Every structure is written in structure tokens, then in C-alpha cells.
Image 1 (cartoon, rainbow, N blue to C red):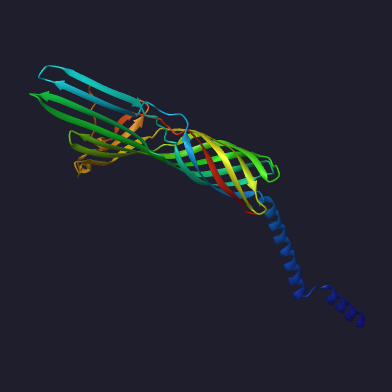
Image 2: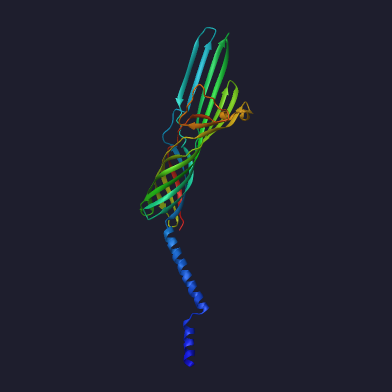
Length: 314
């Protein structure tokens, strides 16, 4: 009996009670959480975000779409004399010129190699052109003058997404780096026209958009690392890009202060940009369908300077 009791007593000492079991489970859970947190922290040490803004200058241009010109003409019906003069010049059009701002998220695999995903927005600087003509008719010693002016403005905005590859090296607190990758762009072009034809004032506004432009994003810069999680950078940014809208829409059409939009057909309000058009003498334009015209590629290539800040997340 005593031996049995002694064995029972030993068994009681060997079997943990409920408090002991809870402490063991809590200790194991803490170890797992600590291990997971340590692993996550170690893998996330290379994670960072950036904010930047800058200015882009046009790189390459189109000189066939816009021009400035003036024309002057005098016709004297009394003696039959005739005189005219004029001047024309191309306007360099590049819609990638303007201010930009954006945010990047990046990850460094080690001290030298990483990847980034760039989100940026371009607010293009407008490009203007103007034409003016003056016609003078001398009849019976009296001069009759007719004038014509036409002002055109093109402006752009574009959202850009670029996954890039990062290579850098550490030189004390200065980190030179290079970034390279493709860029996907979603753009919009606004065309404004203000015309005065013999006193009749016409104002038009059109929006061109649709489609995706694919180009190349390259950056060379220096990063200055502070003692904390923050660093500052300055970089030269070059982008090779052109954009061909897929569609256009007339959004404003006013003549002498009166809105003419309600009276326009779909064919007069909308246009589709295509690579090929087939037509013949039997072609019947459907007023309920958009008009068609050949596609136009607008230059958006640029080179500029960005400044910004990088913040390490862990």
C-alpha cells in the first residue's frame, strides 16, 4: 500500500499541472513569434519608399504639326497693283516637357542590387502657335481690311508606371546609383483652338487619349545617407517615349458665345486614330459613328533633374 502510494506521489510530481503547461505553451508561442518577427525584420530591412519632384526638358521634337506664320496682302483695284509678304516658322513640339512628381517603392537585396516600382505624374507645359493674315483691298481710294487669326495650344498630362532595376555602390555617406527599366504611360492631350475669322469668334477644345505608350526610363544619381532612416537624392532622369492616342473627342465648340455642341453628330464630335484607312467614291460616312484619321505619334521624350527623399521602412 505504501509502495503504491509512493508511486502515485512520484507520478504526481512528474506530471505538470495546468499552470506549468500554460507557461510552456506561452514560452513556445513567444519563441515562434520572435523567430517570425526576426525573419521578417531581416528580410524587410531593404524595403524603402521615395518621394520626388522635378522638371523635364524636351528631348527631340516634331516640327510638322504646329507653325507660326504671318501674311500681309494689298490689292489696289484702282491701278491693278498687288503686293504681298509673309513669314512662316516651325514650332518645336514636345509634350514631355514640364513638371513631374511621384512616389517609388523599392527593395534592396543587398548593398548593391535592388528593384523599384515608380509611380509618377507628368503635368506638361503647353506649346503655343499662332497664325495671322491681313487682306487689304483699295477701291476708289478707300481701303477695306479683312483679318484672320488662329491660335492653337497643345498641353498634356500623363500617368507613368515603371518597374526598374537598381545598381548602387556605397562611398561613405554618398551612394552613386543607376536605374533602368521600361515605362508604361497613360496619357491625355488637350487641344485648344481660338479663331477669329472676319470678326466671327470660334473656340474649340478637344481631348485626345486612349492607348498605352511604352518607353525606356533611365536615371543616374547620388544618394546622401543621414544617420537616421532618411536619405536625400538628386538625379538626372532621361526618358525615351512617344504617344499615339487612339481616339479624340470634341469637348467644346462655341461660335460667337453660343454653344454648338448639341447640334453636332457623332461623326463631327469624335474621331478614331487608325493605322490604315480605306475609302472610295462610294464611301458613305455614317453620322452616328466616329470619324477616322491616320494615327499621330506625339513626342514625349525628355531629360531632366529630380530631387527627393528616401525613407527606410525598417
